[in-house]
Amino acid sequence: MWHPYVINSINAVVLIIAGLIVYFIQPSKPVLALVAPGLGIMLLACTYHLRKHNQFVTHTVTTLTLLAAIVVIMRLNAAGEQWDTRHILLFVMGISCLVAAGVFIGTFIKERRLRNNSIYKDDL
Image (spheres, rainbow, N blue to C red):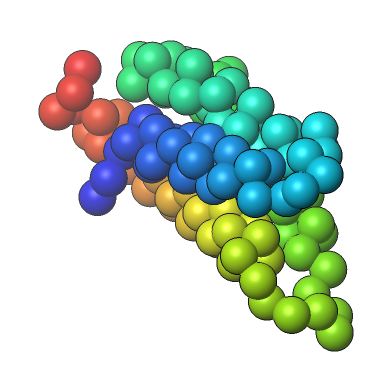
């Protein structure tokens, strides 16, 4: 099982790279397209604290990741439109955030059931 800090790092890199690509492929260069890379940078900054098992940061990162998934998927607006590069990248960012949030929540549940913090014994 991958640890939450690894999944967070992967998700943050996906948000940064895909968000910057979406920004640069659009001719109008909307500032709204920089929200995903900004969020990715914030999530990447939280990786150290996730590795140290700070519960407040863990819950905050999970909430931000779910919020990012909702925002990115709502920006799709794919009803009747062609699926171009922008839509595909938004879909990838949304799926990445949903998978990351699922792993975070799965780790919370597994840790709660074990109650002995044995999930994290190998990296403490």
